[in-house]
Image (cartoon, rainbow, N blue to C red; front, top):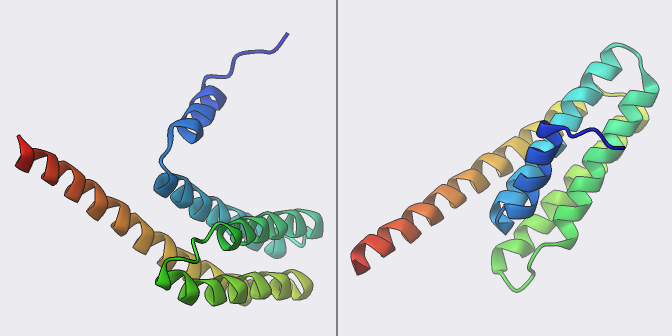
Length: 134
């Protein structure tokens, strides 16, 4: 019999009720978390944990790549950036290089922070628009 885990239930619920924008934000946060774990693993010389977490970060970047809406002109600019980050993660894994992970983390943090601003602006416009109609 499964034991109820309130944290796991909350996590599952937050994913199933999140908007597409919030899901993208979760993906960015997940990739950053895995990079952080991988950097710590490199410092601790734990090859298995490093490899696993860099691969998880890569999987997220690849998911971001395949889910890009290429009908939006900005996507054509973001795709090469995701591809570059993915290749750098691969290189960081091969070389166990924290500096390369720092570079990837910096780029993903900028993308995440920009995405967060877009979500906030979108929410303000939606709520502002609703007030105008009332």
